[in-house]
Image (tube, rainbow, N blue to C red):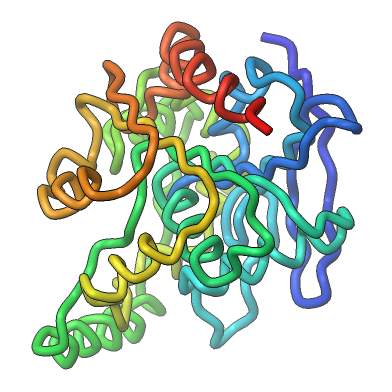
Amino acid sequence: MSKGFEEVRLSLPHIELAAHLYGPEDGQPLLALHGWLDNAASFARLAPKLEGVRIVALDFAGHGHSEHRPAGAGYALWDYAYDVLQVAEQFGWSRFSILGHSMGAITAVLLAGAMPERVARLALIDGLVPFTGEAEQAPEKLGEALRAKLALNHKRKPVYAEMARAVQARMKGVGAVSQEAAELLAQRGLMPVPGGYTWRTDSRLTLPSPLRLSWAHAQAFLRALQCPVSLVLAEQGMMGAQPAVQALLAELPFQVHRLPGGHHLHLDGEAGAQRVADCFNPFLRLP
């Protein structure tokens, strides 16, 4: 498969991020945001099938070839939202659309709900709101997060003697993917170390969240959206395990497409990518 993209580095005021650029320079601005522990290669199959858009597919901070956040910093969703705004500023985009998968879709909803004047459209893949937590759970969850943060100093990333072993591990990871998809993610997500390969991702990304939005918070962000939303749900994806979200969708004026495939249906094969593109191309062309 030919690359079909340009690799760039973006020097933001607070961090340097890597990205892939797709599409014509005069296309409609579209920021593509990948899922947790993935990278810009998540859109390697889908991006070339989207028409009339200039796509900036980011490696989120701590992922892929982007810098890690400094010592003492964390990876809250709202920090990602700020990164996205800074990327848009660098490209001179006062208004833009967002293509988001999983965590990237959640970040997109938070940003679009908070700053509706900046976001024109949301094209979301198997992601909508974060896992939530209520007030009575907060002390226990913060304790878990603090203990895990202390223990992280004593943990080491896995080292794989061969890249193929890392690919096999990614196939079985969170949001299991096909071998071809795992190979694309691994090619960008691995780095050589003594003894083989390990993941470039920041180990802090695996820490539990110290604080979660409540269900009321999550609903408030969805109801604050002012832009058109097109949501692709994977029939074997992750959102099927969130019945409260499924019930809420019936009340919201979103385009909802239910397609065959798993959580990474846009990456697992050409057919899945084409089905997702067929949903989003008419949506992105609307005035």
